Image 1 (cartoon, protein in one colour):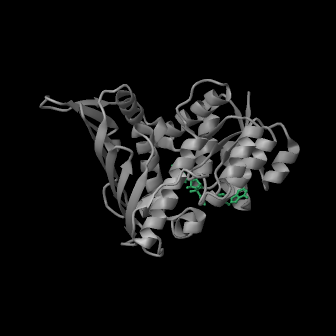
Image 2 (tube, helix red, strand yellow):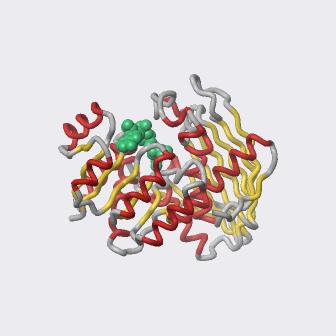
Image 3 (cartoon, protein in one colour):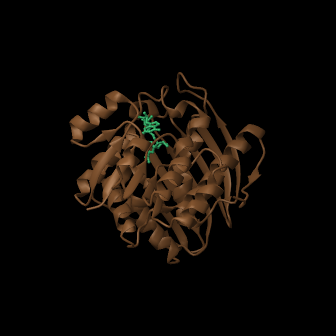
Length: 332
Ligand SMILES: NC(=O)c1ccc[n+]([C@@H]2O[C@H](COP(=O)([O-])OP(=O)(O)OC[C@H]3O[C@@H](n4cnc5c(N)ncnc54)[C@H](O)[C@@H]3O)[C@@H](O)[C@H]2O)c1
């Protein structure tokens, strides 16, 4: 059985630890700098939890690692892990800027291992099935799309003021933390974003100054896409609507369903999956990563796809601060 090291045991790291353990296909250990969390992981899951990555790597014997620290550490850690021969699953966003991307790409070329980025929409059956429909030509050419989403973030993350979320340079704010999931999903559905105009602001969340509300007018090649999201609204809802030359397609994340209305039809045809608990997506993600390690096909976000979404994050933040549209550069 492969041995997986979970690095960082905060909110998402604990979930990855539990979900990798649940697959029954690997053994799991962890790294966490905070003493109380190390004890908690040992008690709750019966796993060894090391106080530093260096100490864990010195022991040897790891096949792969899952990087669950704040974003500025993602690419530096990925390079260390690749050089030690490990496969790597990296949390989103890939980084906060593009500075380390060329070095990380060079490390991947020098030490070829399976690397994936944990944009979890790739594991949502209602998104994956919609993508199959789109990429096999069911909508024709997608020309226009709207993405409307939001949730009451403090309900899901009461500690939001004390974590990375409060600071842009740690990967915080609505663009890098939440919108990035939606943009990565849209890029997976219809191709890369090429231009962005982003209006964002701090509207409501107490105790932080980063933007909690964003309106975006984007181009993904031929398709004009608008995104509207906030992190304070009462309902936890995600609507994606795509219009193509052959018809329209809707994804309703909160209802775990997708639907199609072909040109000439009067009614939507909906496809609903049996309800999934949140851990189930992460168990699927763990299986997909283990599959990828074995050389099997995997739907996970690739390194280069995550670089592209990182370009979007940077361009959106630049547009927000300068008040102008930004064309995404393909450099780095
Ligand atoms: N895919 C998702 O749905 C999802 C959800 C939440 C967070 N995330 C992402 O995961 C990352 C972590 O988010 P979080 O909410 O778990 O943050 P968090 O603050 O709850 O946890 C981060 C943990 O990393 C630990 N840490 C920091 N430096 C370390 C080091 N050098 N070695 C070992 N441990 C270290 C911290 O002590 C902390 O416990 C972020 O990039 C975030 O954007 C993704």
